[in-house]
Amino acid sequence: MLNMMMFVLLISVGIVFIRMIRGKSIWEKLLSLNLIAIMIVMIIITYAVENQIELIMDIAIAYSIIGFLSLILLTKFIAGGRK
Amino acid sequence: MIVNILLVLAMFFVLAGSLGINTMKGAIPKLLTSSLIDAMSMILLITALIIKSGFNSMSIKLSIVLLFVMLTNPVINHVITKAAYEESKDD
View 1 (cartoon, one colour):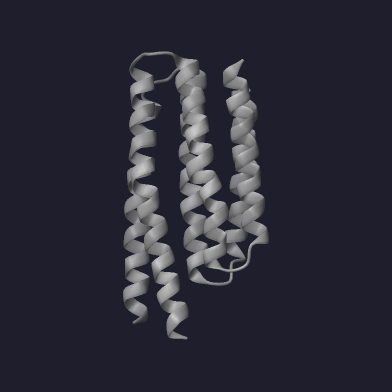
View 2 (tube, helix red, strand yellow):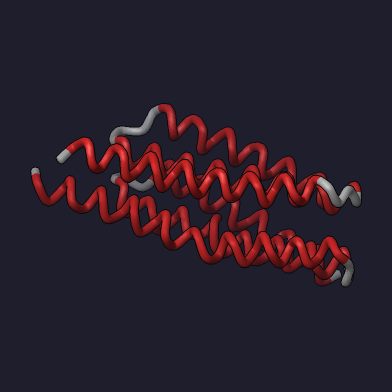
């Protein structure tokens, strides 16, 4: 069941990635980038629980922190440059 | 048994969110369907994984991931939506 969950998440990352490339405005692309970061964190968590490897969980925490910081700084930079 | 039910619900919400991203037009309506993935499916998946793994140090780290994602996702969505609204108001 966890293998099927990872497969569904991988298909969903592909669909959202296509939408990120073909998006109209910059804000839709940033929203899709946020979703891709969240789904990659979900894939890492599922893999760690399935194989009972505890060190991979630290990578998931670090990945969520890096995703948060990059999205906030990128959005502030683009919105400040437009005005 | 209850783990499989929660995982099937999480799969349904992930597929519904990623298909809803393709059908909505504009940045602000897309926020409606993106919250299906980053709030609903994340809570269901982490609850299922905590029940499956039992009470050990892995479930504590899962709780830390859930707490961090629940604290930071509204901030990201608010910043992106406010920037998109300010730009659409100027034009």
